Amino acid sequence: MRCGQYLNDIRTITLDLDDTLWAIHPVIKRAEERLYAWIGDHYPRITEMFGPVDLQVLRAEVLEEFKEHTHDLTFVRRKILTRIGVAAGYGDDYVDDAFEVFEEVRNDVTLFPEARPALVSLRERFVLVAVTNGNADLGRIGIRDLFDGVVSAAMAGAAKPARQIFDKAVEVGGSSAAQTLHVGDHPLYDVDGARDAGLRAVWVNRNGDEWPDEYAAPDGEVRHIGELGAMLDQK
Image 1 (cartoon, rainbow, N blue to C red):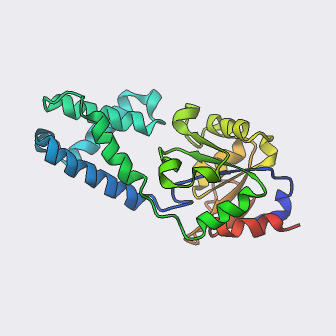
Image 2 (spheres, rainbow, N blue to C red):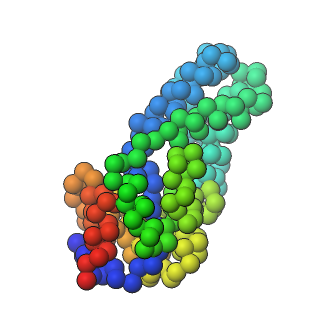
């Protein structure tokens, strides 16, 4: 791996959120379970008609039908809620309330212990921009004040690793792509996508995985973002 001497001219850091600042899979599982239970309590005909497996099938159908919206996870989830509500004879008036149930749990995340101190320290030196394919609400999570900007796939009209979302992040950050460092956990979505868009990239490798040979190596590797400041201090 390359190291910090390749990163001396960085002015903006763009940061992935899910699985970089917190673990996302248990959160989504909990949110989906809470939503399904809430629907069963308030709109029982839906859960009588659709089990969890049925909802997965419906999700695949929606993604296939609305390919132009696959980057917008809010659109996809709301479309599914609309379809099951209509199918069960309830219509779609309940969708806002149902989505709020999901959102409340989805944004109840536990930051990795190093995340907040690292963000506070990095923001003193760099412009920080959150870049996510998901729909996390940083205000609800309590860290919006630590970022100068937020770019989501829904806002950019494309999801990582597409260049479009990284171009938008560079625009929001206010520096050139070459002066922008993207930091994230996914070799393709974060590292390869960012480098293809002209950004530098650091891989967050919490599990000690081997870097996949099919992608060019990142500019650096850290176990977590708490190590990023020291890497950037290297000359």
